[in-house]
Structures are given as structure tokens and as C-alpha cells.
Length: 331
Ligand SMILES: [Zn+2]
Image 1: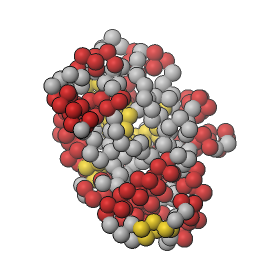
Image 2: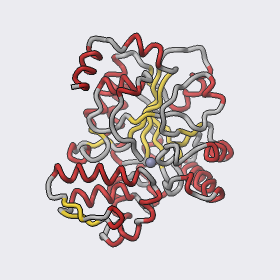
Image 3: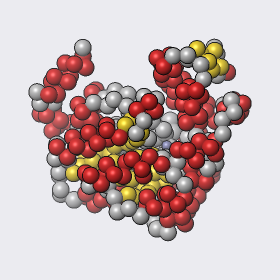
């Protein structure tokens, strides 16, 4: 009911006066997977149609769609037109296959942030493994969660999946502690990497597209705040060197894995700057301002890639109306 009332208020344009006060100069939006298959999108990510509608709405609202290289110059300029930077994390193959044609249709640049191990096929992509298990099993016994999960129906699968996701998201080191459990389930991580992430050749072709900028996303996609200092710094430095070696061009931007307050903070921001990045992106509320450009190493960013995000919710996140937002954060 609250949702319907909010939709009605949005349709009547009642958010507009508030938005003009609540928004910053612009917004960074985060997406991950963009599926042609709606069955997968019910678990994670969004659909190609949803991305299409999102970009159509941004164009209709007369929002500038800019690339990440334009962010700092724009923040330092007197150009106060509202802008959005589209970012996609993890380097999914669907970004090249499904997202790129939509970006072309709207002439929308995007930053794709890629962890080294996705490309080298060594990534412990536990979130893909978890989804695979939920989609293919009727029961699941996850040790620390306690009981045997009965997931014989689509409804039960999705409900339990959300619950287990929240349990992992409360402390991302839990997933890494559970690596032996994933291995016991017969999950092949190289196979998942092959199925879902771009390989080196695909990434090179993607990076050559004029609308695409490639950013860093650490070497192993672990929660950086949980790592000892030297290891955390190596995550950033090694990933940058890997991507620059592969793509033969400088990598100026990065996004922290997971990106929440418990996964990255001032220590990681200092390391990102000293690794030579020009910007580093977190996942949190916040306004982009002229001041942001002076210390752009914990940039605020909003999740805009969850299934079923409504137009008013998109309007809410790009205008700082955070109460309108719904949905889980992402990796
Ligand atoms: Zn990620």
C-alpha cells in the first residue's frame, strides 16, 4: 500500500521539489549481472529490459550520462547539470553481450570493475556457487546456518536464498571460511568463472569499445578491511598491474569489493591513492559535490541493478531520496 501511494505521488511529480534540494551534483550507480534470462535475475542482478528502461528514464529526465574519466573534471567545473555514471562490478560476460548494445542505444558510457581472478579463472566466486546450489538442489545443509534448508519450490528457494545472502552479507569473511563446504558440494569455481566472467580476450575486446572504461576491483575480491595492511595493498597494486598489462593502457579507477563500511574505510582509501588510482568507489549513501573531487577515494554509490527496481526508486537514488530505496546491496 505504501508502495502504491509512493508510486502515485511520484507519478504526480510530488517528489520533484524535494529532489532539487536533496540531490548532489550527480550519482554513481552500481550494477552487476544483467540477464537475458529472467529466472536468473530473480536471484541476482536485473534484466536487459530493466536496464533499457532505466537508461530511457535517465534520458527522459534529461540527466547527463558521463564516463568515469569525466567525473572529476565535471565535479570541479561550474556545470551543474545532473549526471549519472553507470558502473558494473565483477566483469560478467553479460556486460559485453547484453549490456553493451543497450549502452550503445542510449550512448551511455560505463565503468566495468574487474577482479584479477575472474579473468584468470581462480576466483572464489562463492555468490555464484551459492545461487547455483539453490537453483539446482531441493535441500541444502549449510553447516553454520544450522538446519537443513528445504528448497523444493521456487518460492522457498528465493526466500531461503535471501536469508542466506543476508547472513553472508553481515560478514563477508564467512563465505571464505566456508570454502571447504563449497568444495564439498562439488562446486567447480573455474567452471563458474568460465560460464559467467569475461576471459582475457573478451575483456580486451570490451575495453576497446569507446563507451567502456575498465576499472580495478582487487585481485581476489575479498573484504579488504579484513586483510592485513600489506596483503590489502597488494590486492590493489597487483590488480592494477594485471589489468594495465593485459589492456596496455592505464587503469585510473577502482571499486572496492562489496564496498560497505565494514569492507573499506580510510585505510583502504589511502592505499588506493598510493596505488596510483585517481578515484576509488565504495557502496554507500552520499552526495557528490565539488569537495568530493578533492578526496575521491571513498566515493558514494547506489545499487541500481537489483531485480524489479522501480522507476521511482531510481529517481529516489539519483536525487538523494534514500527512503524510497528498496532491495539488497550487491557484491
Ligand atoms: Zn564485486
